[in-house]
Image (cartoon, rainbow, N blue to C red; front, side, top):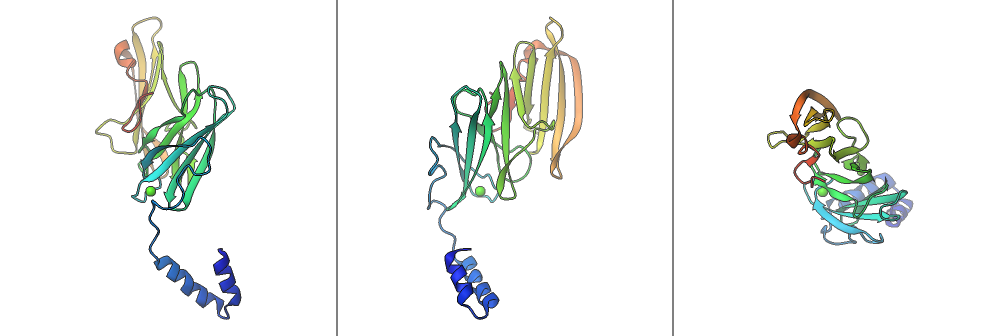
Length: 235
Ligand SMILES: [Ca+2]
């Protein structure tokens, strides 16, 4: 409670009624312009504004800032994601970041079908595999959105013998995500590929369908890796 309201309550003889009147008057006051107030990166060393996108789903764009801590490409680092949803409201979260080179920011995209964009940032880089965090707005803050296969990370890969990717086809409604996984058959030129289709429903990912083909041509399998989702770079 603000000092003003606290002192008002203390002095008031009929505290509840009078306080209600004050709060009602405050609620009726026009909100300050969202352009006013500190920026999303204010006070955060190394923070960079990476996007203006509606994160909390209220229909207005929010500034998104990202900073990293630790040494580039080394373990034990961290990524900080900040979202400014109002003139004086900035929500920030921190996640581990390991072996990640360069900016951990990947992009913003509608993934789970709820209002507001999800924010995708790095977590771990392997030899050729990348593990990424997806952050989503929930109950006034940013939380980790698990991948449709229930893993905490969204994993992508594009190598000689394996491809891992995530896709939303142009005809798919938002909230539908396909997981693409392909492995080379022995030393041949075909892959065994599995496409799992998930849909966000009632607060969770649901598996709708899974199809496997043992005869995916190599050239096709090489296209499966990475993100194939509007708003996100492939790798
Ligand atoms: Ca917003």
